[in-house]
Length: 263
Length: 325
Image 1 (spheres, rainbow over the protein chains, first blue to last red):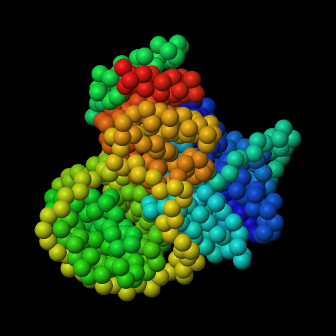
Image 2 (image 1 turned 60 degrees about the vertical axis):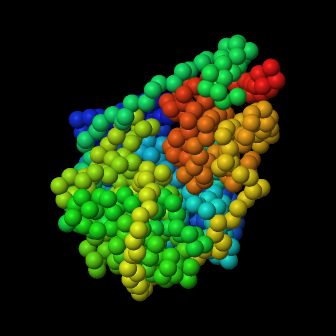
Image 3 (image 1 turned 180 degrees about the horizontal axis):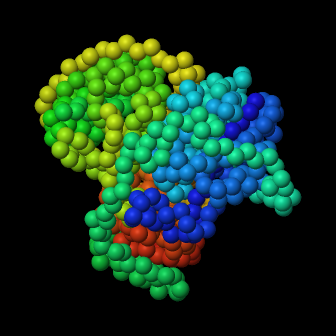
């Protein structure tokens, strides 16, 4: 079985995120890192390989993004992927969710995976939907926010929390599954794996290499046009107390609650 | 002139409140652009005529009903694809929630349409609809305009107000041949409740715990504090419920409950959007977190940056003493 893991480079959690108001796009300058949610997807792939219920021949990390996204692939490889595929093309810049999902699906088609895994959301775009877009293009079943993944009778047995409680779903391969952060505790890469990451095979492909229709990607090909922003209705700023003397802090909290007749 | 097609989720013979809100919103916006709102439902025999007709009271003139598996997104994508292809709806609308995200995204791929999620407001501009979505931790509102034949709008939980009037919708049955890949997924069990059945919805005061509690036993601190108040209950975030620290019935947020108590005291909760949507209408929000950059401080009325293991026990004692005084 071949598993492809979709990964993404995102601004480091410590970097304040902002929109470049002239382009309407996320300002992606500054320190970057592998999307933390994606590490759970890589870990899930590793656990499938180590679990032995299915034979995992290969784990391939796949990303779309500028040249710098290479670092996310190195990180993914250090966490256990065998090789990586980098889709990079100027024509893809500014793609919306639907266009990005289409482009990723075209890159994945080239690999013909049995299973595509991804994290439940990207740390920067606050969007939980890319897996479902990719799945429909690949004509594969899909489930998102999965917190338990097992193999049973050659199929996936998946659990997740949905609107009315926990659901258990059986999905036959091939499939696209996004995993929640409760599914596992990702391992730390070994020093050896970090050092060796750059030596693992990496393939660079362009949009035309994977047969992407240029009219369906980029800012022009996106069906959602963003670029107008405004500030939300102002909310009164709350009071912040830094706890230095806990007795004093607690006194202040009690006074605050008492003032509002909450005790 | 465009009609709006609204997906309505249901479970055990009852429609989802957020879906009904979306029907109301769809009807109001469709009227502004010279169209109608239609609903689409997919499921089993509990979707009877009487139940489906009630969607008229929320503003749907027609209900497209397909028999199919429940609780999964892809059957609904197949159904909506067919309905939209045959009837030419200009917009597809969802009330939010996990299935709404999945269906909306799958439909975007199928129909080469634009999709916007977490939408908190929809406005009419001429004969088109635009969607407003908060981004970057709700610090900015981004406006989405759609190109092409179809625009997909996925609301944020509780974004659309629900109001009921008179009226019955016409029920139209449709036959759909499901895609081969849709049939690769099969629901084994749906809506399983994990952990004890607790009631948090009637409480005036909620003490909620998150990952910052450190371990399941950390909830004892929340329970003791809750016990010091009158009519208080303990609630939890999805992360700790999934980790098995606290029962699902006490979960607040996107896939849990929505509450608006007089006081919401969040202990060790970062305040991710999925949690915020379930508690932001609380009258007073107090947050205790050791990370001063936690998003919850952006919308808490009183924020305490500090160690909850030190603060909660003393706060419990102080409240007991205050009440005793």
